[in-house]
Image (cartoon, rainbow, N blue to C red):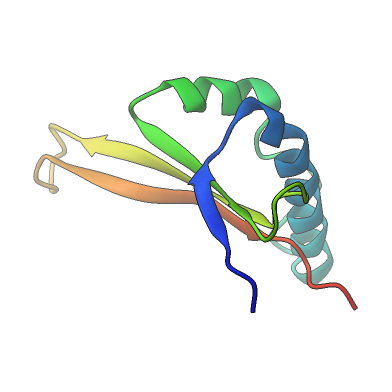
Length: 104
């Protein structure tokens, strides 16, 4: 099994991330049409903004140097404050996780 390199995402990873997102979106719509509709969950501008914020992180996985990324993870920090029932806290939330389909 090859070594997998996990690193922070960069601007050049965005087109592949959007491509992978399209695959996942289509899969959701196919398997659960009662829950999902065709739509793009995020776009390049949203990713660029997230790359620069301290309220989240985007990581990608490379199976081999020079090959398209094999997957990504988008994590955001959610803050709860002044809630009626919940105590104030911060949570790391996995917003999106995707791996490329295995070749047949």
